[in-house]
Image (cartoon, rainbow, N blue to C red; front, side, top):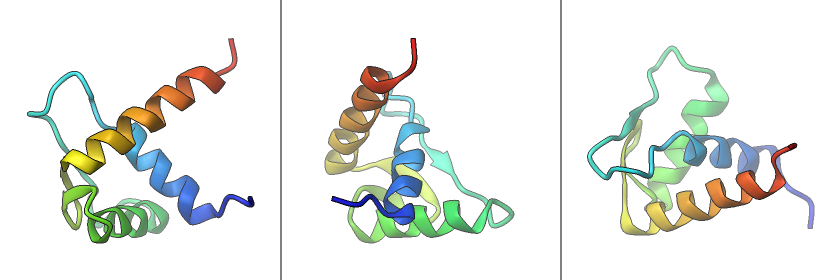
Length: 78
């Protein structure tokens, strides 16, 4: 299965969330890279974040972020 650039950009956004608290979100400013802005908007439309520019993780978003961060930890170079 080929992995699209859009998919990778969404993973990058999910990797930014601090999973040790549900009280901390992210904000992707209008001055951020276009890829990051578009990825965050897609995550919002998929129901993973609460705001079009980030916000907090939804329940589904938290699951996705946990899996994303776990996979990155497994694949990380030692």
